[in-house]
Amino acid sequence: MRPLILAFALAIAFVAAPASALPQTLEFDVLREGSPIGGHRVTIDTRDGETHVDIAIDLSVRFAFVTLYRYTHRSTEVWRAGRLIALDAQTDDNGERTRVQARARDGALAVTGSGGDYLAPADAIPTSYWNPDQVARRRLLDTQSGKLIDVAAVAVPAEGTGAMWRLNGDLEADLAYGPTGEWTGLSFVARGARIVYVRRGQTAAVAR
Image 1 (cartoon, rainbow, N blue to C red):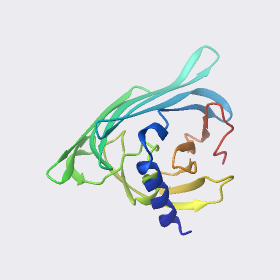
Image 2: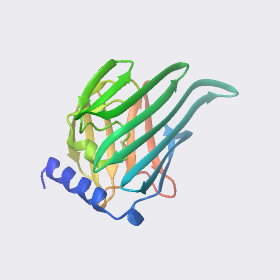
Image 3: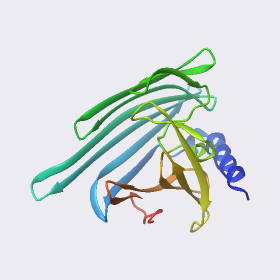
Image 4: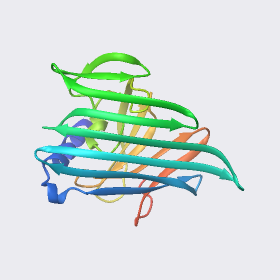
């Protein structure tokens, strides 16, 4: 199956699944070169025809009793009919604080962030990873900067019945999804160190 066709199939399977089948909480332990540095939690709640997604990331790199680096991120997303209609995100990247807000308006997505105020395409998808349709897009909305970034996804061999993708461009990472489209893993390099997400209760889905 060609990469974009597979991405579309995964996205449809995920969106079309009944609310009771959706994972209500996705929790990951985050490892830096094999050592735990925090966690990433995604809570999904579908009600009244809308999907509400709450995301919390807390990371801290320590040496002895000294914190060398700290990262926190909080964001909320509201989706309706497969499109993002609202996004509010706050990030503290080791003391550098950013905010991003997006609202559906007049057939577009009005975005406010460090990239300025502008109108993004109405079907823009944020870089929050849980949505498998992300790998089928060439441009994504960066939830930390508020900018549109260019990416290209290539399917790579995966174990089991899921799918794995390598993102290149402004965002470089490996993403893994299960057979029904649920997000199962992430791996990338940050500040020269390999960061790997491990789904709690499972072995690493992405270990490159």
